[in-house]
Length: 599
Image 1 (cartoon, one colour):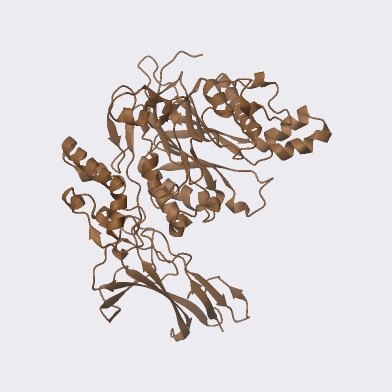
Image 2 (cartoon, rainbow, N blue to C red):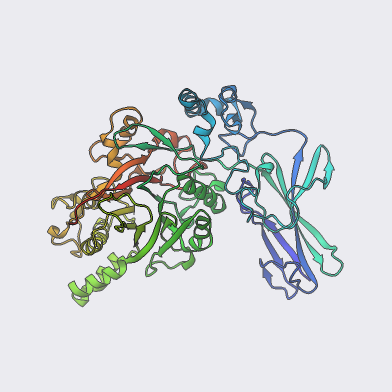
């Protein structure tokens, strides 16, 4: 007979909007052990599995700590209440928690006061993009997403299922999976699984149960401002009511989202396991990405299964069309579904797809060795060059126009390159070669069409490195120390390390600003390279690896997403954290196409 051997949850801390999927181990009648479901619609040997979820609601109200969401709150900041800051931000689990967090917490008060002074509507200005209280405005709450179901039962039936010892049990779901909602915050959930006779509909044998910890709200990143760099020093807020982009401009987001296969507790032991779990991170990342309202989104480290099953369908609901290039797998030996790659999305109401180019650096390596090296040296060279990295180049046509009356009807094309360059720091020659190979491909496209270009991605190269110099300066100093190690001659002669694209780093525009919020951002740049002080922040490394480059003869930067300061991130040790779900930060730039004479 069908029997349940074991039931457990991968994480016992449930989070609003993050699907809970219990692990149910079964023994089938033929003694085979499996995790396959046996639903009522397909009984096995006259039996099926019945699932139920309950919310255990205590008569005593429970608040959750805003800093340690798995802990019960014991005190509330009255300053937050007076400033009308969302109530979830005001709770703390202990006086020490409050005092330790004060340096960062007081920023909420300062921003609230500033917003009141500016327009008297502090809550919308400060918290319009993300709902920190975990209410139905959350992307993943059932009320906001009708596609989320928790079984056939009404989510919150009026009838009390059971009442015992000051507790009320509400049945909230009859499916194997359950997605906690805002109503569950602060409450324990109970999962039941039992074998049922298909004919009598009565339970057979032992009822397997699990109790979770209290449901916590999904911690949301504090809103990041978009700052104008075109001579007017004003802040814009990204909120759910509309994009910041004005007519004739478009915005581009570049973000390494940290592939799930790399998000391990061994690498990121400082991040709570529930905040590292993919069900949590994917919702937090989606909420963040959608909240930026970018016209073009370039993502790196997107697993192929996550692209197909999550990002492509979810971003489609928000008006995006997606294109994807998976890394090659000559080197990778694991599950091919977990190979990551580059995904480029664009808003279908702003752009249409014209052409796609896929760059496989392994193929380029094969071509180079075939033409340049004798057979005896090929294997050694390919072992060094084969790293599975790729780039995705997309040509788009704008559906908007900023052409003058003298140029009616001219097609506005845009070329967007999205890449993730080799990560190994001891293979600087391979890194430079990959960047050079990409730039040579882009030069060919530029030669065939008068087209603005964007080069986005994680280049795994710090400012001032040879790879960065090649991108930003169009050449590399022959005496650059990164050129010293070139065992297979891939960089020789060094004079070939040039390109003619007028590329400029978008974030260097902050260096021109000297007052107000712009001055604050300027302090977050490296003064020697005018690049951000960091885009990647872990416990063991902090530095800039991600960039958005643009062709300065055809595009101009209008505004930039503000950079984060290290101090605000260190309250959680480093990235990723419950607030930010990648070890990288997102970069976003708003551009305007410049009218120009054909080259």
